[in-house]
Length: 128
Image (cartoon, rainbow, N blue to C red; front, side, top):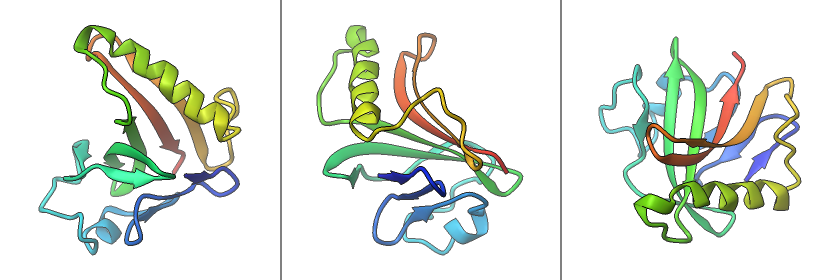
């Protein structure tokens, strides 16, 4: 899924995100559909990464990638149990040997649950 040594994450054969990946680079992919590079946006289709289905969203800041957010869709959760998806994300990171307490030279990876938005996600934040 992600190379913790350099922060590269392969979303698909055509889209690999890495530190300093720019919105201009994203415009040259099949995923670009006149999105606004200022807001968070979701890729149109679920992506399969390491044999798991994810909803992928990207957030650019000052024209560079700031965050990739992944929501695993392998299991269905009711709206009232969305917080349980965080446990799924925690397990995915544990299986990959990713320690959420570590900051890397390029960024950090966390599993989060936002109670206000009732959304759980794996967030890959880049220091640019």
